[in-house]
Structure formats: structure tokens, C-alpha cells
Length: 439
Image 1 (spheres, rainbow, N blue to C red):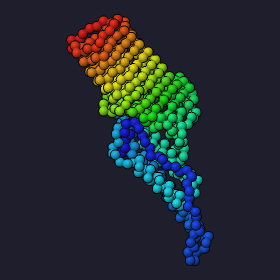
Image 2 (cartoon, rainbow, N blue to C red):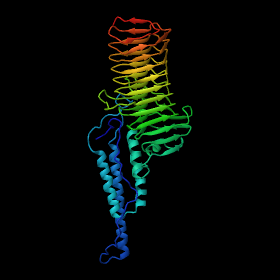
Image 3 (cartoon, rainbow, N blue to C red):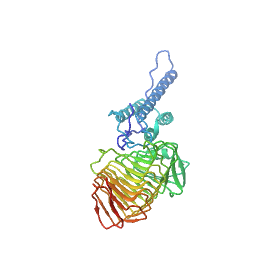
Image 4 (tube, rainbow, N blue to C red):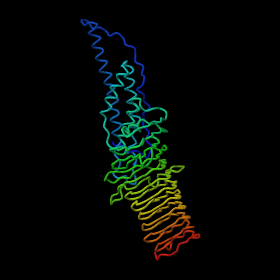
């Protein structure tokens, strides 16, 4: 059985402590007839050591079994990066029970706790993981079992010489890791299982890079994750996004640069930020799932940002340049606002399809094929945007699109606002030509 993460909340059953354990009092060994007391004591000590080692081994075996339930993500960071578990089995509770039973044995045997902890730490190093998610689970499990996972938030400063994945695994919810200047070159994706803040020295000086096949950063927690003053770059050749999350994430990024996402012809990967969800993945109450402030999202193969499900964004003063098909794509029922930002060099600056309802205010769109394109039952609100230099048109609406367009300025475009016969937006005062297409 291979388990994958359900949504983006990972609850590890790690309420275990191999900290101080009370050992039963040693009793003098019974001396068999014909055996000296010294010989009996040595024999008892050997049996005790064997039993203690066996109990430690049970924890190691349980850890390997637990980590094996987490499999790799679908390659390329597809539209469903965090599938439901393959079964509803109780892997978490089984693991917790196995560790609890082994710890009880260690206590009942009166094992030397310091020695047991040392042996456990050594033997846990042999546990293997398949893929970045399983590796993150393994690292956090090791930290919890060996007492390196604090119960309260921590603030730490780390450098490129440190292992960022290990540092993250030892940071509980609410922790802040300050990254000094330099490049944090990861071999695989960095999976975040807790709500942490990664704060760099500046997006021109602190870089997190990875050739990972899914993403540079996988957000696998519903707790708030924050990135600031860092550049996150994908450096591989396989399809991947830069930041990837599921339906219940909460991500805030300030003064960041996101680049290098790779796409393939089948549409896998390629987004600076991909927040995915099925149309039915809706929380009872939805707040803002992505906050982006003063960000540069450029040079990504398919898109700057892709939102599906009912994700909601708040984007302010950010730049989207040369991002393949679209600067930002609103899919399904996604929504949110984009203000005071610039879009250039992508196929379409902003796309709204499905039943999405984005609000675009005071943005500048330059070049590309189309500034803003909407279709289906989308209802975009476009206010005080500037459109210039598009090859086809500033704005194209197809299908029963509603919404509102006002205060738009069009310059150097073959067509301004192009409406299909079924498009019925509310048109305010715009400095753009308006045309109806034949179909």
C-alpha cells in the first residue's frame, strides 16, 4: 500500500518522546546451580542488551514501514499534485502504537536510555525514503523520535553550508528560518510539512534552487507558509513548477523571484506558482490562499501563476514577464484581486475561464497576443488597466462572459475590446474600440 497526501494537510503521529524514560529497578539475577554470580550477571546483561537492541529495532522497522506508505507525486506537478490516500488505513495510528509499545519495552527492561537514544539515532540513518514527500516525512519523524523537533516555534539562522531540508524538518509550526546570502542548491524538491517562514537576505542574494521533478518547493500543510526576500529557481530539465500546493494551502510571498519552471507538451509543470484543486475541493470558509507582494514571476515555461478549484489570491505591485501561455490563469471558481502589477511578454497577460471571478485593477499589460482573455461563465472585473502592443487584441471575451470593464486604456493594438455575441459584460467608460465577433 502506497499512501499519498490527502489535500495538503499532513498530520504525523509523532506524539512520541524517546526522552527520559523510567527504567525498572534492576534485580540481582538468579544464579543457576553450578554457575558463578559473575557469570550469571554477564549472561543477564547480554540478554538485556539484546532485548534493548531489539526494542530499538522495532522503532526503526516501524519508521521504515511508515515512511514507505508515502509515495512520490505524479511527475511534473500536474493539476492534482496531492492525491488522496490509496487507502483509509491507519498508518499513523499503527506507527504511533508500534513506537509506544517499543518505548514501553525499553522502559520495562530498564535499558540505558542514553545508549538507547544513541543507537536509535544511528539506526534511523539506515531508513530510506522514495521521493521528496517521503523524505520530508522521514526527516521530521527522525527529528520527533530523537527529540530534535521542539514543541514551540523556533527562530534560527542558517547558511548554505547547512542542510535546508533538515532545518525545515526541525522547525515546528510558526518557526522562522533566516537564510543568509548564498545559494541553497537542493538535490530534490523541498517539501514543507509545517507552517514556517523562510526569510532571505534579498532576492538578488539568497537563492533556493532545485532540479526537482515536481517543484522546487512543495507546500504540504494547511498552516501558513511565508517566503520573503528570496529567489526560488528551478534548474532542472524535467517538467516542474517552482512553488506547488494543493487546495488548503495558505502561502504569502513578499519580495521574491520565481523562475525557471519547465513545461512539457502535455501540459505538465511550467508554472511559477501552481495551486491546484479539483472543482469539488472547497473548504467551508475560504480566505486568501495566496498573497503576493512586490514579486517578480518571470521566465516560466507555461504560466506565472495557475489557480484552480476555489483558490483566492491577493497580488500587489508584482511583475509577470515571459511566462509562456499566461501571466496568470484563473481556472474553475478561483478568484481574487491583482492590483498595480505589470504583465509583459506572455501569450496572454491574464486568463479567466470556467466560473472564475478575478478583479484586475490598475495593471499594465504590454505585448503578447492578448492582454486579458475570458471565456465560459467567467465574470472578470477590469478597472483602470492599460493595454498596449498586443498582436491580436487588448481584451477578448468569448461565451457567456459577464463582469465589468471600465477605465481601460488601449494603445497600439489592432483591436480593443472584442466581444462574442453571447458575452454580456457591463461596459463603463473605456478608451478602447469595441467590436463584436461573428461567433
